[in-house]
Image 1 (cartoon, one colour):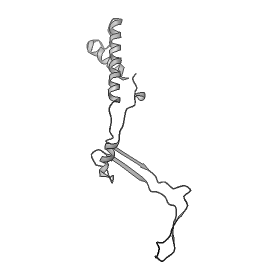
Image 2: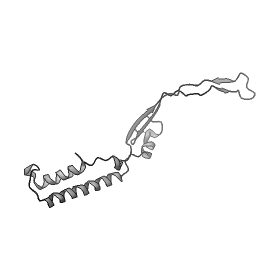
Image 3: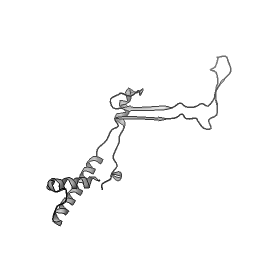
Image 4: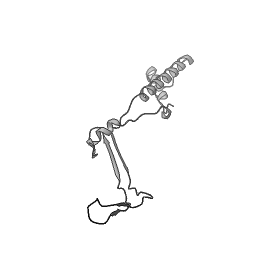
Amino acid sequence: MGLKTDIKNAFIKNITPEKDNDFEMSAEGKKKIDDLSEDLSKAIVDFITAQTFRVDKLSASAGPITPQRVPPITVPNAPGVPGAPHTIPPSTILEVNVNVDKDGGSPSPVGGGVLHSNKSEVRLRKGEVTEE
């Protein structure tokens, strides 16, 4: 069920709790309940979508990643240091893990993830709210 229908059913249940939503009501009464349910539904959606939701806990990872079309890198010795230049071959980038925790309980190397949690935002998008 949707928010509007849930609100409407709550009103009807409150008006006639003993009749299980099967009652006689004037067309005007039904329209008033329907309109009020619609208005409350929109007000609740507007309120929720105006809020900023923060991430309390998040874990994400990426990798391993192998660089594509990266040639070997030749690093010459510093002036005055004997020896041949060194060649560093392309290599695999290890898995990167990111952890965010509002309480600092993650193994993240930066403050237990608190900083990233406080910078993160999660929003409920109006276009994705199911109202019916």
